[in-house]
Image (cartoon, rainbow, N blue to C red; front, top):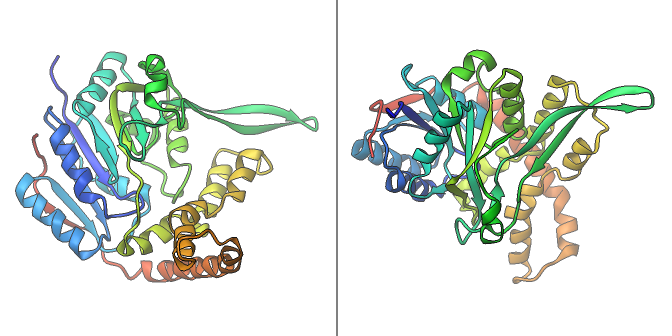
Length: 345
């Protein structure tokens, strides 16, 4: 079978400090030819310099924006530079590590099943490749009668979430499913002729569900290929990560995204699917930064009293930073492009 042309589009997820490890794993573990477009949305100076050095060494295309980008904005920016003869685009977040054969196995699955979207077995955390984050799942709109009215709800289910890989390995096999996540997602490029570009109205959440619903609506198939394995690596944030992280998981971006998603798909706002997410607003900031920060102030001890008093201040600060970004956004310059159009392993 002739290898089709494949382009990787790497984008920032929530931080920049894992850039080197992630990019190195792609080159170390990819044995088939590929092109690579790296979208750098406002990384700190040392990361920007590292990426420019890697362009000179490896020959990929670097697209640099001096402003922070929401994930779908970054993916669409990368798509602008994908060669027309690329059959597949693989969206890759900048905080994953890959395993040998990861890309070939994704492409083989797409070729053999005629899938429009293929995701790998996506693990989470460290030690790497040991805990399941996503092995495919279900995502669809269902109709329910409530008070003699028909309402539209989202059904969403993750397979094997947070289970040890060793515990479920005999149940992991190639299967058709209903959604993938953008941690790592192969997409047949021609599906965009039926779904259009990724929806930038979704700033921080539900973008993967939205896209996969659109793919299914357009007649495309979605598969999970567990012979391809990547890990989304969580870890301590560096100070230079914080401005983007706070914006990425801001209350405003999350609320706007949920509202937009609900209105786009004509969903019931009172459904527990949305109530749960409204209740968890800001939980990523809380777990990744706020709680560790308070613990440091309390000499390594959990301090609920201090947490409760500082939470309102954290939310005020988050609103201020988000507002400041929105005011300055129109003054930012456009992207700069550095490097070649393709690279080979």
